[in-house]
Image (cartoon, rainbow, N blue to C red; front, side):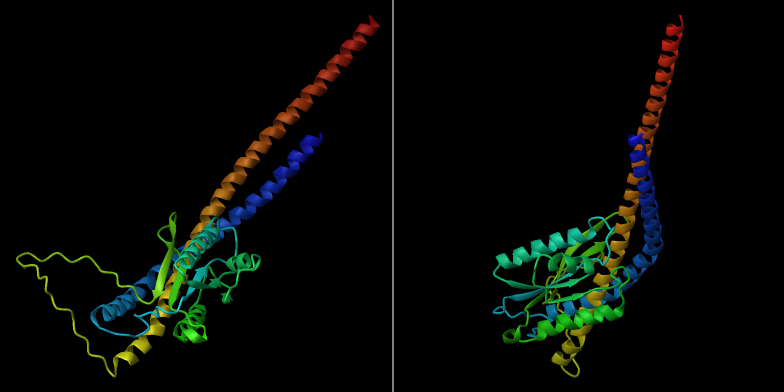
Length: 306
Protein backbone atom coordinates (compact mmCIF):
# COMPACT_ATOMS: atom_id res chain seq x y z
CA UNK A 1 0.00 0.00 0.00
CA UNK A 2 2.81 2.35 0.90
CA UNK A 3 4.47 1.70 -2.45
CA UNK A 4 1.23 2.53 -4.28
CA UNK A 5 0.84 5.80 -2.40
CA UNK A 6 4.41 6.78 -3.30
CA UNK A 7 3.80 5.95 -6.97
CA UNK A 8 0.56 7.95 -7.01
CA UNK A 9 2.36 10.92 -5.47
CA UNK A 10 5.13 10.75 -8.07
CA UNK A 11 2.57 10.50 -10.88
CA UNK A 12 0.70 13.58 -9.62
CA UNK A 13 3.90 15.62 -9.28
CA UNK A 14 5.12 14.52 -12.71
CA UNK A 15 1.76 15.44 -14.24
CA UNK A 16 2.10 18.92 -12.73
CA UNK A 17 5.58 19.26 -14.22
CA UNK A 18 4.32 18.01 -17.57
CA UNK A 19 1.69 20.76 -17.61
CA UNK A 20 4.32 23.40 -16.78
CA UNK A 21 6.68 22.14 -19.49
CA UNK A 22 3.88 22.02 -22.04
CA UNK A 23 2.81 25.57 -21.18
CA UNK A 24 6.40 26.83 -21.52
CA UNK A 25 6.70 25.09 -24.89
CA UNK A 26 3.50 26.73 -26.18
CA UNK A 27 4.64 30.16 -24.97
CA UNK A 28 8.00 29.74 -26.70
CA UNK A 29 6.24 28.53 -29.86
CA UNK A 30 4.11 31.67 -29.92
CA UNK A 31 7.20 33.89 -29.60
CA UNK A 32 9.66 32.17 -31.90
CA UNK A 33 8.15 33.34 -35.21
CA UNK A 34 8.34 37.01 -34.23
CA UNK A 35 11.82 36.67 -32.71
CA UNK A 36 13.10 34.94 -35.84
CA UNK A 37 11.62 37.54 -38.18
CA UNK A 38 13.00 40.45 -36.15
CA UNK A 39 16.48 38.91 -36.15
CA UNK A 40 16.42 38.22 -39.89
CA UNK A 41 15.09 41.71 -40.69
CA UNK A 42 17.91 43.36 -38.72
CA UNK A 43 20.65 41.38 -40.44
CA UNK A 44 20.69 43.22 -43.84
CA UNK A 45 21.27 46.60 -42.17
CA UNK A 46 24.07 45.20 -40.02
CA UNK A 47 25.69 43.50 -43.01
CA UNK A 48 25.49 46.72 -45.03
CA UNK A 49 27.19 48.89 -42.43
CA UNK A 50 29.78 46.17 -41.79
CA UNK A 51 30.58 45.96 -45.51
CA UNK A 52 30.88 49.74 -45.66
CA UNK A 53 33.28 49.83 -42.73
CA UNK A 54 35.32 46.98 -44.19
CA UNK A 55 35.55 48.78 -47.52
CA UNK A 56 36.86 51.90 -45.82
CA UNK A 57 39.42 49.97 -43.81
CA UNK A 58 40.55 47.88 -46.79
CA UNK A 59 40.91 50.64 -49.37
CA UNK A 60 42.21 53.53 -47.31
CA UNK A 61 45.31 53.96 -45.20
CA UNK A 62 43.88 55.08 -41.87
CA UNK A 63 45.07 55.12 -38.28
CA UNK A 64 41.63 55.48 -36.75
CA UNK A 65 40.84 53.24 -33.71
CA UNK A 66 38.14 51.52 -35.77
CA UNK A 67 40.90 49.77 -37.75
CA UNK A 68 44.09 49.99 -35.66
CA UNK A 69 44.53 48.62 -32.16
CA UNK A 70 47.01 49.66 -29.51
CA UNK A 71 49.52 46.81 -29.50
CA UNK A 72 50.97 48.00 -26.19
CA UNK A 73 47.64 47.74 -24.36
CA UNK A 74 47.00 44.13 -23.21
CA UNK A 75 43.47 44.80 -21.93
CA UNK A 76 40.60 43.45 -24.04
CA UNK A 77 36.84 43.50 -23.42
CA UNK A 78 34.68 40.37 -23.69
CA UNK A 79 30.88 40.61 -23.73
CA UNK A 80 28.94 37.40 -23.04
CA UNK A 81 25.24 37.29 -23.99
CA UNK A 82 23.42 34.86 -21.67
CA UNK A 83 19.76 34.56 -20.67
CA UNK A 84 17.63 35.89 -17.84
CA UNK A 85 15.57 32.73 -17.39
CA UNK A 86 16.27 29.03 -17.34
CA UNK A 87 14.39 26.15 -18.96
CA UNK A 88 16.35 26.70 -22.18
CA UNK A 89 18.45 23.57 -22.19
CA UNK A 90 22.22 24.11 -22.64
CA UNK A 91 21.78 27.66 -23.99
CA UNK A 92 23.52 29.59 -21.20
CA UNK A 93 25.96 26.82 -20.29
CA UNK A 94 27.22 26.68 -23.90
CA UNK A 95 27.84 30.44 -23.90
CA UNK A 96 29.63 30.32 -20.56
CA UNK A 97 31.78 27.40 -21.73
CA UNK A 98 32.78 29.27 -24.91
CA UNK A 99 33.41 32.45 -22.91
CA UNK A 100 35.70 30.60 -20.51
CA UNK A 101 37.56 29.11 -23.47
CA UNK A 102 38.00 32.56 -25.03
CA UNK A 103 39.21 34.06 -21.76
CA UNK A 104 41.74 31.25 -21.39
CA UNK A 105 43.03 31.77 -24.96
CA UNK A 106 43.37 35.51 -24.44
CA UNK A 107 45.20 35.04 -21.16
CA UNK A 108 47.47 32.51 -22.85
CA UNK A 109 48.35 35.17 -25.44
CA UNK A 110 49.36 37.57 -22.68
CA UNK A 111 46.12 39.56 -22.74
CA UNK A 112 44.16 40.85 -19.76
CA UNK A 113 40.48 40.22 -20.53
CA UNK A 114 37.79 42.31 -18.85
CA UNK A 115 34.38 40.63 -18.69
CA UNK A 116 30.99 42.19 -19.44
CA UNK A 117 27.85 40.07 -19.03
CA UNK A 118 24.30 40.45 -20.30
CA UNK A 119 21.70 38.17 -18.70
CA UNK A 120 20.83 37.20 -15.14
CA UNK A 121 21.99 33.60 -15.50
CA UNK A 122 25.49 34.61 -16.57
CA UNK A 123 25.72 37.32 -13.92
CA UNK A 124 24.74 34.86 -11.21
CA UNK A 125 27.23 32.27 -12.49
CA UNK A 126 30.20 34.63 -12.26
CA UNK A 127 28.99 36.27 -9.05
CA UNK A 128 29.03 33.01 -7.09
CA UNK A 129 32.46 32.17 -8.50
CA UNK A 130 33.86 35.52 -7.41
CA UNK A 131 34.84 36.41 -10.97
CA UNK A 132 35.47 40.09 -11.58
CA UNK A 133 32.85 41.53 -13.93
CA UNK A 134 33.15 45.12 -15.13
CA UNK A 135 29.44 45.60 -15.89
CA UNK A 136 26.27 43.52 -16.08
CA UNK A 137 22.87 44.08 -17.69
CA UNK A 138 19.65 42.19 -17.07
CA UNK A 139 16.12 42.15 -18.42
CA UNK A 140 14.30 41.00 -21.56
CA UNK A 141 17.03 38.79 -23.00
CA UNK A 142 14.34 37.03 -25.04
CA UNK A 143 12.96 40.36 -26.35
CA UNK A 144 15.80 42.92 -26.33
CA UNK A 145 15.09 46.47 -27.41
CA UNK A 146 17.13 49.24 -28.98
CA UNK A 147 17.58 50.92 -25.58
CA UNK A 148 19.58 48.05 -24.04
CA UNK A 149 21.68 47.75 -27.21
CA UNK A 150 22.48 51.46 -27.01
CA UNK A 151 23.38 51.23 -23.32
CA UNK A 152 25.73 48.28 -23.87
CA UNK A 153 27.33 49.81 -26.97
CA UNK A 154 27.96 53.12 -25.21
CA UNK A 155 29.64 51.35 -22.29
CA UNK A 156 31.88 49.26 -24.55
CA UNK A 157 32.69 52.18 -26.85
CA UNK A 158 33.74 54.30 -23.87
CA UNK A 159 36.03 51.48 -22.71
CA UNK A 160 37.51 51.14 -26.21
CA UNK A 161 38.09 54.85 -26.80
CA UNK A 162 39.52 55.45 -23.34
CA UNK A 163 43.34 55.78 -23.23
CA UNK A 164 45.32 52.78 -22.02
CA UNK A 165 46.62 54.64 -18.96
CA UNK A 166 43.01 55.25 -17.92
CA UNK A 167 41.97 51.62 -18.14
CA UNK A 168 40.92 51.49 -21.77
CA UNK A 169 40.83 48.29 -23.83
CA UNK A 170 42.41 47.55 -27.22
CA UNK A 171 39.94 44.96 -28.53
CA UNK A 172 36.22 44.14 -28.23
CA UNK A 173 34.87 40.57 -28.40
CA UNK A 174 31.30 39.33 -28.13
CA UNK A 175 30.18 35.75 -27.40
CA UNK A 176 26.63 35.01 -28.52
CA UNK A 177 24.44 32.29 -30.04
CA UNK A 178 23.67 32.59 -33.73
CA UNK A 179 20.23 31.48 -34.88
CA UNK A 180 20.59 29.06 -37.81
CA UNK A 181 17.17 27.43 -37.74
CA UNK A 182 14.68 26.02 -35.26
CA UNK A 183 16.90 23.04 -34.51
CA UNK A 184 20.44 24.43 -34.86
CA UNK A 185 21.87 27.35 -32.90
CA UNK A 186 25.65 27.85 -32.79
CA UNK A 187 27.76 29.75 -30.28
CA UNK A 188 29.94 32.33 -32.03
CA UNK A 189 32.86 34.53 -31.01
CA UNK A 190 32.96 37.85 -32.86
CA UNK A 191 35.72 40.42 -32.70
CA UNK A 192 33.95 43.72 -33.20
CA UNK A 193 36.92 46.05 -32.88
CA UNK A 194 39.32 46.60 -34.46
CA UNK A 195 37.54 45.65 -37.67
CA UNK A 196 38.94 42.49 -39.25
CA UNK A 197 39.35 42.41 -43.00
CA UNK A 198 37.45 39.44 -44.42
CA UNK A 199 38.38 38.98 -48.05
CA UNK A 200 35.48 37.82 -50.20
CA UNK A 201 36.19 35.28 -52.94
CA UNK A 202 36.93 36.89 -56.29
CA UNK A 203 33.98 36.98 -58.65
CA UNK A 204 34.31 35.01 -61.87
CA UNK A 205 34.73 37.17 -64.99
CA UNK A 206 31.77 37.51 -67.27
CA UNK A 207 31.60 35.78 -70.65
CA UNK A 208 34.05 37.39 -73.05
CA UNK A 209 35.73 39.40 -70.27
CA UNK A 210 39.41 38.98 -69.52
CA UNK A 211 40.34 38.57 -65.85
CA UNK A 212 41.90 41.76 -64.54
CA UNK A 213 44.41 41.12 -61.79
CA UNK A 214 45.36 44.77 -61.52
CA UNK A 215 41.86 46.05 -60.95
CA UNK A 216 42.02 49.39 -59.21
CA UNK A 217 40.49 49.83 -55.78
CA UNK A 218 37.73 52.41 -55.50
CA UNK A 219 38.69 55.90 -54.44
CA UNK A 220 36.90 57.69 -51.61
CA UNK A 221 36.41 61.37 -50.95
CA UNK A 222 35.51 62.17 -47.34
CA UNK A 223 33.56 65.25 -46.35
CA UNK A 224 34.19 67.05 -44.08
CA UNK A 225 37.14 64.75 -43.16
CA UNK A 226 38.06 61.10 -42.77
CA UNK A 227 38.29 61.33 -38.98
CA UNK A 228 34.88 62.93 -38.59
CA UNK A 229 33.27 60.40 -40.92
CA UNK A 230 34.75 57.46 -39.00
CA UNK A 231 33.88 59.08 -35.67
CA UNK A 232 30.26 59.24 -36.82
CA UNK A 233 30.24 55.68 -38.19
CA UNK A 234 31.92 54.00 -35.22
CA UNK A 235 29.04 54.34 -32.68
CA UNK A 236 26.48 53.25 -35.27
CA UNK A 237 28.64 50.30 -36.26
CA UNK A 238 29.04 49.10 -32.67
CA UNK A 239 25.37 49.58 -31.79
CA UNK A 240 24.12 47.86 -34.95
CA UNK A 241 26.36 44.83 -34.44
CA UNK A 242 25.44 44.49 -30.76
CA UNK A 243 21.75 44.93 -31.51
CA UNK A 244 21.88 42.28 -34.23
CA UNK A 245 23.71 39.89 -31.88
CA UNK A 246 21.09 40.53 -29.18
CA UNK A 247 18.25 39.80 -31.60
CA UNK A 248 19.73 36.59 -33.01
CA UNK A 249 20.61 35.50 -29.47
CA UNK A 250 17.01 36.13 -28.40
CA UNK A 251 15.72 34.00 -31.28
CA UNK A 252 18.21 31.28 -30.34
CA UNK A 253 17.15 31.41 -26.69
CA UNK A 254 13.47 31.08 -27.60
CA UNK A 255 14.15 28.20 -30.01
CA UNK A 256 16.34 26.48 -27.43
CA UNK A 257 13.64 26.87 -24.79
CA UNK A 258 10.99 25.46 -27.10
CA UNK A 259 13.16 22.45 -27.95
CA UNK A 260 14.08 21.88 -24.30
CA UNK A 261 10.47 22.13 -23.13
CA UNK A 262 9.30 19.80 -25.91
CA UNK A 263 11.88 17.22 -24.82
CA UNK A 264 10.99 17.72 -21.15
CA UNK A 265 7.27 17.27 -21.91
CA UNK A 266 7.94 14.01 -23.77
CA UNK A 267 10.17 12.77 -20.96
CA UNK A 268 7.51 13.62 -18.37
CA UNK A 269 4.86 11.76 -20.33
CA UNK A 270 7.13 8.72 -20.69
CA UNK A 271 7.82 8.81 -16.97
CA UNK A 272 4.10 9.01 -16.22
CA UNK A 273 3.48 5.98 -18.43
CA UNK A 274 6.26 4.05 -16.71
CA UNK A 275 5.02 4.95 -13.22
CA UNK A 276 1.45 4.08 -14.21
CA UNK A 277 2.56 0.63 -15.35
CA UNK A 278 4.39 0.12 -12.07
CA UNK A 279 1.31 1.28 -10.15
CA UNK A 280 -0.94 -1.12 -12.07
CA UNK A 281 1.50 -3.98 -11.50
CA UNK A 282 1.66 -3.18 -7.79
CA UNK A 283 -2.14 -2.95 -7.59
CA UNK A 284 -2.49 -6.26 -9.43
CA UNK A 285 0.02 -7.91 -7.13
CA UNK A 286 -1.87 -6.58 -4.09
CA UNK A 287 -5.19 -7.90 -5.43
CA UNK A 288 -3.62 -11.27 -6.20
CA UNK A 289 -2.18 -11.46 -2.71
CA UNK A 290 -5.54 -10.62 -1.14
CA UNK A 291 -7.28 -13.26 -3.26
CA UNK A 292 -4.66 -15.81 -2.30
CA UNK A 293 -5.17 -15.01 1.38
CA UNK A 294 -8.97 -15.29 1.07
CA UNK A 295 -8.77 -18.60 -0.78
CA UNK A 296 -6.24 -19.92 1.71
CA UNK A 297 -8.44 -18.90 4.64
CA UNK A 298 -11.50 -20.55 3.05
CA UNK A 299 -9.59 -23.78 2.48
CA UNK A 300 -8.41 -23.76 6.06
CA UNK A 301 -12.00 -23.31 7.35
CA UNK A 302 -13.26 -26.14 5.13
CA UNK A 303 -10.50 -28.44 6.33
CA UNK A 304 -11.28 -27.60 9.96
CA UNK A 305 -15.02 -28.33 9.55
CA UNK A 306 -14.24 -31.72 8.01
